Amino acid sequence: MPKTLDDALVYFLRSDASLHSEGVCDGDLLSRIIEQRDEIAWDALARRHGPMVWGVCRRILGHTQDAEDAFQATFIVLVRRATSIRPRSGVANWLYGVARQTAVKAKAMAVRRGVRERQVPVLPEVGVVEPARDDDLRLLLDRELNRLPDKYRAPIVLCDLEGRTFKDAARELGWPEGTLSGRLSRARKMLADRLTRAGAVLSAGPVVLGIGEAATAGGVPTRLVASTVTAGWQLAGGQTMTGLTPAAAALTQEVLRTMLIPKLKLVASVLLVGGLMLTGVATLARQPGVTPEEPTKADARPPKAGDGPKDQPPKGRPGGDTKIKELQKERLALLRQIADQVVAANKGGQVPLATVLEAQREVIAAELELCGTNKERIAVLEKKVELAREIEKTTARGVEARTVSGTDLLKAQASRLDAEIELEKVKAAPAK
Image: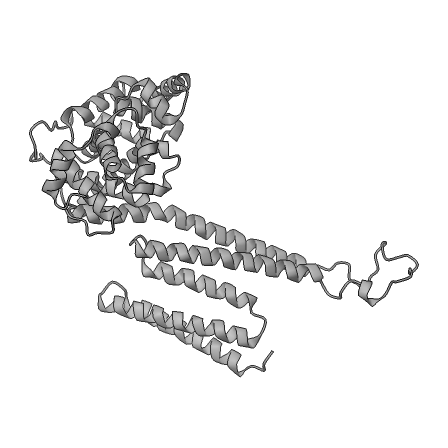
């Protein structure tokens, strides 16, 4: 692996071209990156899709340095989230969506910094072409293209934005050429209709082709690709990334955080549904029904030889409580799995510590539901007290860093006292 940016630049210019040929699909390159940490495959993927990503970033941002930061962030996000791409053949389509999301995020951050959205950039290399005068139309098309379903956006990204042949694009997506042709025509028609509704007068096909030509005509600055590839290698190897600008690093974290929000919402939905299911089961279990003292038709028969106490059903609701326990255990296993994933995400810098603590608190609450004796409750409540103390310490550090208000610290202290009171009550209660 190249140690410096200059080494990476030389490697980039001299690297084996075998993986850059049309014969190797994106899915194969991604698999080599994930499973073998193949540096040449990572280099090939960055080179192959670099012009498309660069075009998206420059169209949306206009300012060259902002576009470079967004370009780097997009590919670092690819390294961090490579295993989440499904199917693996959809790398180009996935990268387009992430590039647009990253560029939009970078634009918002630039506005917050008070930087003008449109500046005349100082070009880093000869040959980098600035966006044409129909920027607004191209931005509109990017917005509408991003809204298309994947099966329509993917062929446009490959054929129009990246200039791939029908044969190459069809092989990449695993579609018959006829299917690719039909979906591409349908996608262009959908875009044309949407552009017309938005007030544009040009058809989608020529505009998309124009974007593709603009994206590839200027080319990506060679040093930008080399520095991005180096940073990706270093990240995959657990090393400190060099060549990544502070703005690109901050943008990467912001995009990863944004991508995680829908997953956290899904987790919350699962927990809510699980809670509703448990409530429903508990309600049904409390409904009046047939009891052992109320014989059913099956029991209204003369006793037979061998009938006795061992053949009689146990009193109470043998099925109801057992089913509830099973569901509670299932829910606890799910919450523990979620907590493990949140801890992993926290180590990767994707979620704050507060999210980890909240997930662990959910686990403790579920464990309490399953406790049958005071001894078991005390053991779980002691864990709850320790967690409350950890939350209090974390909040206190936040107050010192002026990232958390004093009111939040008071709430954390009150929560810790609640946990301690609950523990003492159980300790004082008669043993069960």
